[in-house]
Figure 1 (tube, rainbow, N blue to C red):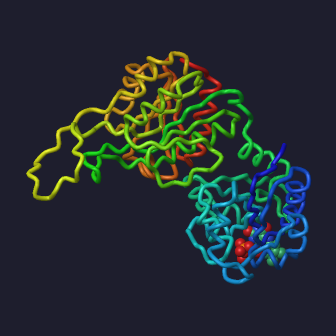
Figure 2: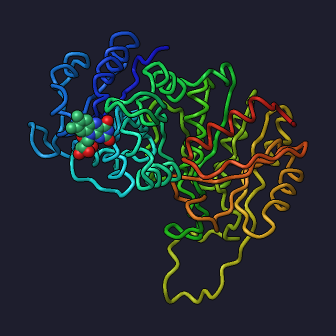
Figure 3: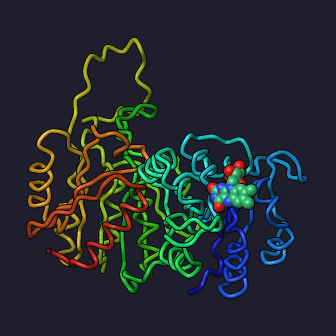
Length: 400
Ligand SMILES: Cc1cc2nc3c(=O)[nH]c(=O)nc-3n(C[C@H](O)[C@H](O)[C@H](O)COP(=O)(O)O)c2cc1C
């Protein structure tokens, strides 16, 4: 297990299990080389001195949004920089605040800004844990896509016996290892991922496009990289942050997307076509801006090139995973598309469902394979959906 170059934000809250966080931090930094920034709540400061955590992390511990000599928006910087935000131990209170979107101190504000890269390791009394309010808060966060390393049953600090005990440190380390390092499922494999929309220009300032944010494609690219693949991301215009260490080619139109994919098609093991390539292109490009008083009453349309079919013609060996956004008869239409275009798998999502598809951080999809298998992946963060798609495909192989 190695966490060198991994940035972990460790959020510590006011639970009696705090003493275990000191040992966790010591292992993370001293044994596994992680770069850990500790944030403590005001309650946590009542339980243990920040000196302990400063010593093991080699950094200042922060608790307040407002002082301590930082110029700028520290909560946003911390949230962005971290590869993972681990709340350990996580009180009932911090879970409730996160579930309600409350941001009234440094840690809760970081959690709100970091979103689904946050994972909670809850620790509390059994009655607090079993209280429907806490259960609902945890369910709500899980549905949004937050991670949980669940508590265990045992003797609690208050002498009650029941669920609520912070899970053991090795399990937390194992979770971090899986999330940050993967298990090299794609080691030695070449993976091409497309993401985002394309823009089909009518004149130099107007275009037809769609709402794709590129989040699903980026999640797949990051997961594939984590699993040891050599990854190339080909993305249309998106406003999400793409990590500097992810090899990326930016394109605008469907034609540019096609040319880039064909140029990079050699010896690709897996192609994930998560881009929403705009099907409708203006039939003609007018090279000066169309004026208001030009007498245009309709825009003739032609279809974009069928990129994935062209790729399949060029490269028969690649395992191709297509994506479909379909509302009515979605299952049949998706399977037809998979067969018609010679895909190995297709991932279908129905944007009618809440928190699914375009722009959201979460998704809910059904994956179909050529040989008639189907897997329903219930609503979760796009990273989690990407992780599961890769897991299924690497276990099932091409054309299964
Ligand atoms: C001795 C002691 C132990 C506590 N242990 C826990 C605990 O394990 N889990 C929990 O949710 N709250 C626990 N609490 C209550 C929290 O500290 C309290 O709800 C506090 O407001 C949490 O603030 P924070 O979430 O901002 O850290 C404990 C309080 C005391 C005095």
